[in-house]
Image (cartoon, rainbow, N blue to C red; front, side, top):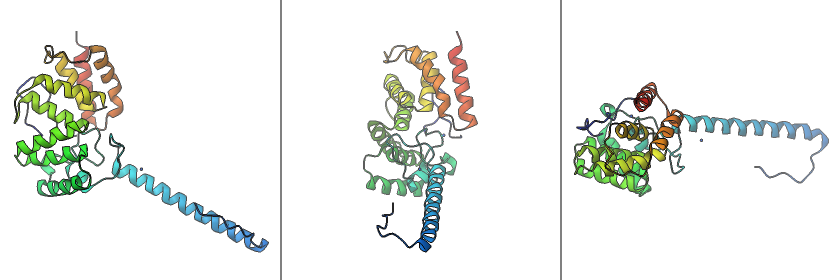
Length: 242
């Protein structure tokens, strides 16, 4: 992710960032119980298989992605960010990322699903960590254009920092508003903190304080870790100050 901002802004923390056809022939009476037992056993196996599939999916997928996709790729496993609200695999901290493997996996995943916002963001993350900011930012822009909230959040952060591109505080703020409305936790937190600190006072963002306050109130349902809870609590405390 980008380095610590030069402006009054919270750091983007790397910690923390789921039918068988019936036989029409009537069985002999002596065979009916065997058939019933066989059907019961088959039904139990089907139920157990379905339950296992649901548990496996819940463990590996987590929160569904914004486009409803639940298939986890190697790109997700290697390059998801811990604080990405819409990630579908456990996040990998920057110091634990295998950049070469992540870049290869995400490039392959993008070939299978061109234009996928989540994959574009994660590939951009690999390039950014590999000190290729130009390519990384290009992928972040594509991710944001595809409507992926974490792509919008990170691009907004980069624009506000002027980290690798021309600074654009208001453009970054607009991205955070859109991502916050798309249920992205840290977009809500960053938008609230920096709105209260006056960063966007000259931007004319199409949002008002009651909506931001409501976002913070509802953000608890997005919490996945103690760190996220702490960051949300701090944002609420900051917002409550006169």
